[in-house]
Amino acid sequence: MKLQLPTLIAVCVAILLIGGIYFFGRDKAELGIAVNLESEEFKQLRTHATDAFNAGKYKQAIELYSTALKMRPENAEIYNDLGTVYYEQGLKYAGPSWPSWEKELRAETPDQAVAELKAAVAKTTSGVIVLKTRDEAVADAIEAHAKQLGGEVYRQRWENETTVNILIGETKVYLLRARDHYYRALDLKPTHSVAYRNLGSFFMKVGKTDRALDNYQEAYKLDPRDTELEEYLNQFRK
Image (cartoon, rainbow, N blue to C red; front, side, top):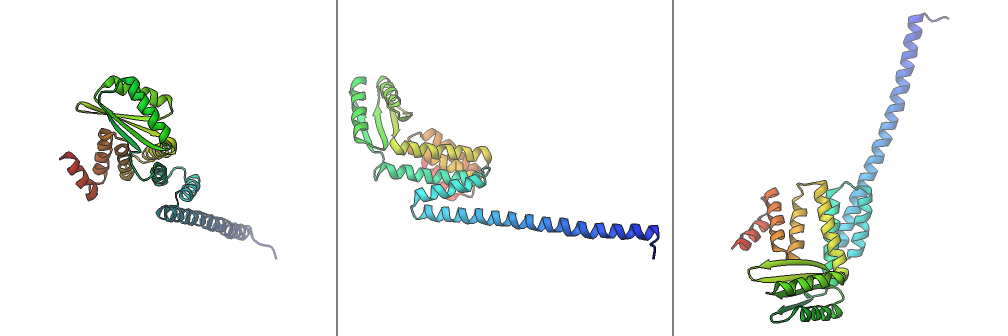
């Protein structure tokens, strides 16, 4: 039996439609499963990283968050979370006391101040050294020599006194990683209030109260529901 031309065309169109529905429908379903599996894997990885962090297993948390970051390099929250782990790891390397070494220099000359710095570095494997002086020449000598020794220097002038905070050792390495990860989180998400809050904590820890306050205020501006930060800012202003 011969099919008429209109009938033949209709049959061909039907075959193409059925085949197309099967083919495209199957591909989309498999793609959805793959995306869901990847998303679930990412969520589990982040959960395990958070659990490790809460348990104080910072090195394990760093490995897990770093793996998560490879999966989602555009994820601002992971940068912030990893920065938080680096921050805590840096404090852990500093030991139980902060600062690790602190002294007020009253009548010391620049050479004597540098000698004090050398003694502090020799006895401090990792942490922060804080030296205070009213003499800007002494502060300049401390800062210059600290940088020669590989320290990260944060200098703050308050009324008639200059405080020089110097990060050294593994504390310096991890705290600077934390700082850089907070900044990266803000590059990806400028409205990330928690990253601003964490930056504030970093700068407060290294003695840069002016920059700490700027970041705390920005965090509160983005999240005025943060009552804890509001109270802290009110106390700071008083």
